[in-house]
Structure formats: C-alpha cells, structure tokens
Amino acid sequence: MIQQQTILKVADNSGAKTVKCIKVLNGFNRRFAVLGDIIIVSIQKLRNKARSTSKVQKGEVHKAIILRTKAKTVKKDGTIFFFQSNVVSLINKQGKPIASRIIGPIPKFLKKKKNLKFITLSSGFI
Image (cartoon, rainbow, N blue to C red; front, top):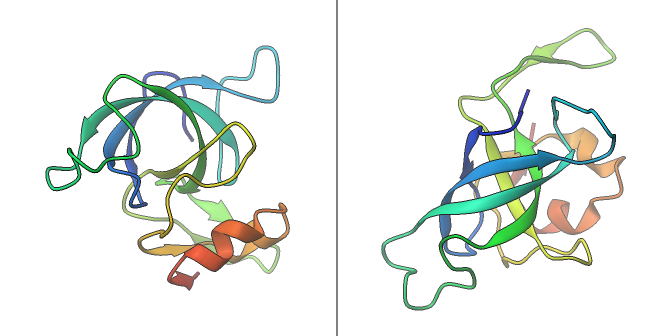
C-alpha cells in the first residue's frame, strides 16, 4: 500500500531513480494506493548515467502507475504474491509512458486495467 510521502523506485528508463508520492488519485479522501493505481509523484533522485540525457528533471511533478508493491496481493485462485520493493513507472498527462522500456516483471492483471502499453514495454509477467 502506497500513501503520501512514500519513497518509490522507478522501473523505467526515463532517467529518474527515486520518486516521492505526493497524492493518491481516484477519490476525495483516499489514503492508500494499490497495484495498478495512478498517483502523483515528485522526482527525488536521477540516475547517474542519465543526468545529461534524462527525459525528466529533479523536482518535477509527474503522474505514475504502480507496478510492484511490498504489500501482499491475493489472486482470485487464492495464491498470494508480493515483491521486494515498491516500484512505479512514470506517465505523461495523456496516460502514456514517458520511457521506452520497463525493467523487471509486472503483474498479469494489469492487462485487465487497460494498461496494454505497459504490458508491451515490460520484460515479463508474474
């Protein structure tokens, strides 16, 4: 579960390394975000190699979609899965990814949430 002030890793090649959650979208008093939700983030750190060619700058505010969380998620068949870290991918105002590649696996059920662009950019499924 992701809430305000949570530090997250970025799993794409946009140039950002870590971001901080500013706001959870979809609801007036919504406190937590889960897998597949969209949040608003501020960029905290940039990757060392990508500082000159980065698509984003430190301190900028972007939207992001949550790809992996430490919180346990239960599938319909009863299996439980979770990840080692909280990971997001940056998106623009139209909802399309800023980056051209997503590093690491993403959950299969993101297909059902109409995020097919992220499915094609990722390396694998869980």
